[in-house]
Length: 151
Image (tube, rainbow, N blue to C red):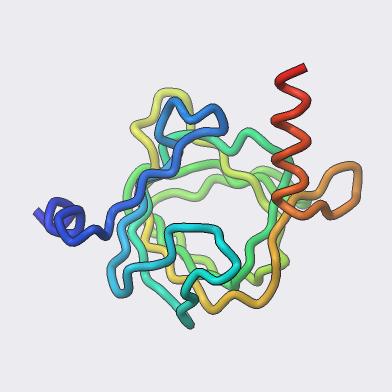
């Protein structure tokens, strides 16, 4: 019922995979309706609380985030890959991470996804990916991936 109510309020966002075919994540904004566009002038808010259902694994290299965040796994779970190894994050797992924390998420193939409560802070930096030991701005990285896939 809560999810349907949030959807009616326009607080549901579906983030699709890189090909735009399958839902990667369902995001429900619990406090503020967040920015939807990536425009530079899009409204910024100091924090937000969201409910995430992650459906697919991250297909890319390790990435960081534009804000610090805290996450609590509610249902399901995922493997989190970091430079220190591969770690199972199941129901009840709570973690606070800096914007610079690098990771990648793998959803088990036999899973119905992972539900988590996600608190994020204010944007403090741009985000990107690590490739061959170098940080690459996310728009440049994703454009290069797309260009490579088209060739």
